[in-house]
Image 1 (spheres, each protein chain N blue to C red):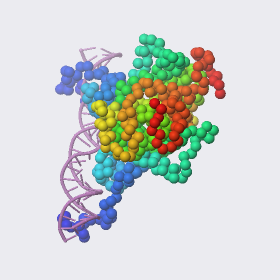
Image 2: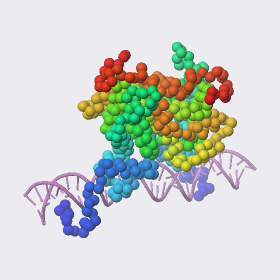
Image 3: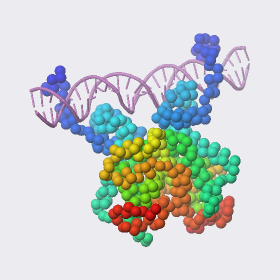
Image 4: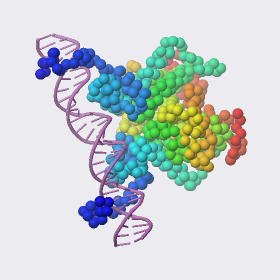
Length: 262
Length: 262
DNA sequence: AGTGTACGTATACATCGTAAATATACGAAG
DNA sequence: CTTCGTATATTTACGATGTATACGTACACT
């Protein structure tokens, strides 16, 4: 029975090349494509398998299960971020965000990273909820390497700002919270309401109680607007001003400045 | 056969009172209980029905489907927030958060609302992801009334700070982003890692690449800490300082101050 | 008493994640 | 070339899920 591999009726001619069709990269990439195109709810094992010309169970070699696959999507997002950062650093130095009052290098670079992260998220709106449900549920050391490298990048910049470990950790949390929350807020209604030209009316606001909620009614049009990278940078600056004691211009310009004022 | 209700084999004695067993309140409350106890994944129609002593399909009278039920959970969270705010405002006036430099009333009250929202979220950690996946996906006017009232409350305070509609909307977005992001970050690892006394090691950090990621490795213990309402207030203050042009002390103390400086 | 209607049940189906066993194709050794 | 080990993909099957549809049943009102 085990021996009967060759001649019988089993083999088909077109089977050639069916061996190495899959890879973790291909699986994650097409999974992200499906999510981008049809939303998170459309991603099922069978669907993804079909998209790759493969049965559903074949995917379990490249992701331990559906949850692991979703974690893989988070990883894919952060790898895209790393691609962007690497490409931009190859072209030119970090851009100065504001020419009038020159910020320290760490601050400019932090803005740069935040901005690119935001742009990656906007490129995959349907995948963003995964950042809340999966990334934050994973216990840090089990997060994908790309995520850990992102943390490291930010922490290095904060150390260059002269913060000690505790202050850097606090600021890193504030950075993450702001970036994540900002992405969520900017993404709202952009996902399932892609075609609303007139903001106030098409949102069904006319049915909103007229005498109640007067401020909300007045501000609805403004609330539906998006601030883009400008608002992201403004809030980040405000938070950093609150977190970094002085201007954050480290006296020792580079390398190890291990002694912050306590 | 239809008539044979009385003596025969058909009716059971305990059927009395099976009529009004359910209500939207009861459904949402027990749904939230299930989620709090066993997590979001444990909430299924059949499970929730069983918890209420009812078939699964009975729930469809009180929620149009599973998604609507999850939206209902968000509503339940905001109704709990309103309960808390109402109860506290009945007991005493709004507490002064900082006695040294007295803040304007609107600012103190905004801190109060943010703090209570944060506390409600911490009381239902498993339900928090719904705030990202459901609440922000719903197009504002379709959000539950309790959510809209929350928006109104915040907008009123921002108007009292002297902001015009556009600035109030911007600040409201910043407020929402910070509050939401902060809750997410504080909640991380609190959900599925409830028993980690020694933070650095039990997180599996020892497997983290030792020579790479030195800053991350050094700051891991600090990163696992939680700042609670203190950190929430600090970041909110920083953001408000960036958003509100002057100190935000409205010249007309109370009531309608419709003319902000433009 | 009779009847309409609000409420809950019963049954059924497509789809989902995935465990287990099986078939197939390539690399290397004989 | 044959043969085998192993990496790869398929097949089959099972329980659970969301929900459409049809049906019973109990209360309110006349």
